Image (cartoon, rainbow, N blue to C red; front, side, top):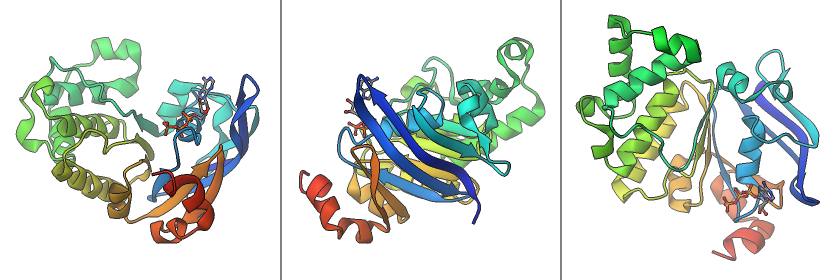
Length: 247
Ligand SMILES: Nc1ncnc2c1ncn2[C@@H]1O[C@H](COP(=O)(O)OP(=O)(O)OP(=O)(O)O)[C@@H](O)[C@H]1O
């Protein structure tokens, strides 16, 4: 399998503290992966490096068929290359409807100036309806986003990311603040998305990770401690020691 994203031996230090320490990671096209690890393991810093927010001191971050170096691109170039990131807190425009938020997201790849000239078309309306259906919001297109539940806002934001047609989606702690029913719908959504996109989910909630039913990467002190099925990694004594033993 050729990797879609390949991270080789990255390290980053903040004031002499090694937050990421010789970390290597690979994900293939249409693969679903969960990243777990205790607080401070380096999960957020890892995503910051992939999306260009933080530059590593060492290592390589390679993308796509041509193994292009993401380290030569800025954050917006990386997003346009096909990496979408969803932060933990939803950042939808609360005064706009679901349809308006999705429509704005569709216009985004055309760049900041073209957004001003961009006008919704029949095609874009169809795409907005398709995106809403994909994230379970087909019935809510005309609702103000501020009226949605926390989980629905998270799905809307995922829909907004999908509008840019990313090849890789990075999703940070989606389960936080969700009801059990919303968490279950979110695992179903993420599994379905991974049929067409690579998806990396950083998550603390073990029941959520179990339902994702995918390969798990355990980070600890900025390195990969274990990798494999959830049952495999949770049987690893080192993982139990550093991670599960504290929970
Ligand atoms: N900009 C920064 N300056 C200094 N230290 C930082 C910076 N960013 C992260 N760190 C440190 O790097 C380590 C890794 O942090 P990171 O946020 O990546 O961990 P995490 O696995 O995402 O943790 P959590 O599960 O709590 O979100 C932590 O010890 C953190 O304090």
